[in-house]
Length: 571
Ligand code: OXT
Ligand code: ADP
Ligand code: MG
Image (cartoon, rainbow, N blue to C red):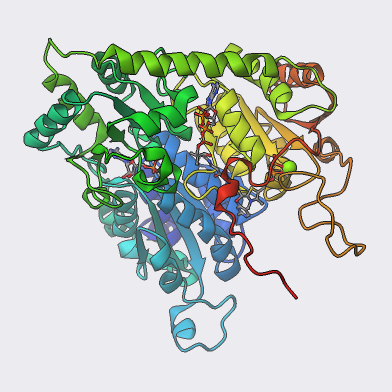
């Protein structure tokens, strides 16, 4: 008997090696949905002291992992079962890759021999082939002795260079493979310097400063890459020393406080249209910036300076006059060092014009935010929530919807970096609850999730997860009875409601009560304010059904121009 135990002690298996490899690399939180073949892996992870959070749908676990990666600069890990679970998680992996968030999707899979001969295994699917085009890298591990190297490769691929999503395929057999414990331990890899600094070429820094110095109307655009970099002090020092107005992209709000005197956020159109030189720091010239072209960019070609870790991002849409390739921390520090003592601020005519526009727009918006209309409009409701974030600047704000998103972005000032988490580059609905859960888990701060009623529906079942783990999340559902508006009518006159309309007078607050959370129905900004303050004070899982005027929104919020227009009427 004693001999048997000793012998067993000298062995290890795939389960143990996965856990050891993750823990060796300080990965201690897993977002998952259990099932064959990973149920026991989750249990053993929990037994080993890891935090294993189970979701109701893999997509939400995946969104949680994606944003965990963004918040921590370590890959967020999502774990799924084979075929359908894997596919459910894949949208989130693609979302992470699109947004440059480091994430690893670990999925169990069926047996290679059967899958490759297409003999109809349980949940048969060639998952590696399907994942490949949707992520930064994809690996499959077939032998227990390769688990250490497989996990190391996945970590390095996720966080080095431009971060992104990585797929890691573990066929069921792998987990039960047994090997010598000592050899197993030796096979583990601790990833050293997973995302090494990438210093910019000195000449690229000098060129960038020359171009910036020569500008009459310069503008800095800060993107979520800048927020991700966690180089907050260097970025603030650089922006302040330059004296250049800056525009934060949505998730870069708060990198410097939105109330900063150089913020051009409230003069976005003017700043984009009139600037002659634009320095992008961790932001891409994609659709969110009209590809650097289009009406808003003025008649004269602008000069672009771009700071990014990905060399291929340069000239992606328009010519970049001064590419600076490297990690943002190193690049911004080099720029700061290169500015010298006698750096001159941009012409006062330019900074003054921006400031004036900011003040006009802020003053114009202010009275609308004070209204106490019933039913609420977006301004009244968000005016109340704006005050709450001002008073609790370390709370994390999660935001999705169309009007709910667009109004919240411009109305709610952010004061600290990485506190605004939203739909990202794809404008994807459904990130809300996964994001809120990971934000609470990873930061330990209270979370306020402001959700369109449609947006909330994509991940609403996760309020049970929020209650189960007793997370300090307050969800506010902006209930205008539909997608964009609740007023649509069926053009055929038939009995089905319009394609964009939901059940009238629904009470989302009742949903959370089923799981022991606090539900509140708020019909005025005062009631909303009271309910959210109480939730933020108590830290209890709360859902506030905020009744919004069903006619208050517009089609697609502020991006209605992207809808194709019908040209030929149907006969
Ligand atoms: O400068 P000007 O004068 O122009 O003014 C600007 C700023 O200067 C000013 N401003 C300020 N003024 C005063 N004070 C302050 N502090 C201030 N700050 C700014 O305000 C204006 C506007 O500023 P902004 O917002 O910065 O500028 P602008 O021009 O809007 O910026 C352009 C963009 C493109 C950068 C910006 O609009 C943006 O980031 N947009 C992102 C849009 C987005 O991603 N939308 C989500 C997708 S919409 C659609 O696809 C939806 N779907 C389909 C669907 C999706 N998405 N996903 C999946 C998986 N399935 C389906 C669905 C189903 S939305 C949706 C549901 C919608 O219904 P809900 O019920 O959820 O939501 P409701 O609409 O509420 O009903
Ligand atoms: P936004 O949507 O806020 O405009 P994007 O997602 O378009 O931001 O752009 C983020 C950019 O930041 C990407 O091009 C990415 O390569 C870059 N990036 C991410 N992390 C870093 C980093 N640490 N250093 C430099 N660039 C980075
Ligand atoms: Mg709505």
